[in-house]
Length: 223
Image (cartoon, rainbow, N blue to C red):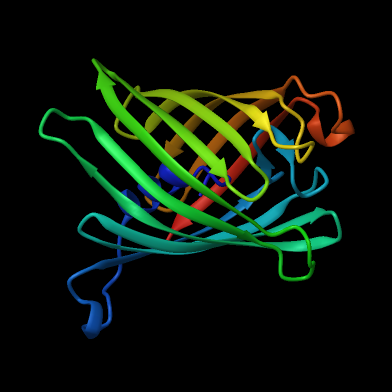
């Protein structure tokens, strides 16, 4: 996965390949992924104190339904691990408009007060050679609203480029700073591993060094 952008991450995992499901779930598909990144950045802010992180997850898809889990090493607020649990429904209309709705829980097993849930929904389509998508994430407990828009295109069958901008429109009652982040990335797929090279930045002023601009390299492999 690329961070916690569930729609993009799930699509990458599902397209990269699937392995044989158990007999009881033979009608669906399982896929997995493992990655090593020079820094785990989420919404423009380092989640592992600017250090490398090991990440990985598993996904199950059956028709419009999907569910999965993803984990990463982290280093903030006393947490050392993040575990994401998510599920939803995604599809495409006859006119080529893709849609995605679901829920994701962010769990930090070694802490008591960092867990939270987001509800999300998004739409995407193709404008000529460019794929565009927009998502809204709502945290009902902390009353935050986050929006994300992205665009990307494939230069070749193995090389792609993308850009994204995300912003907290409502940070709740001081739960999070209202800020905007952005990224520019290039992805390269090979027969063995995939590479993602990405520049991150944001306009927040309360993060310290973990919010500085940075370039992140992630090497991943589908299972």
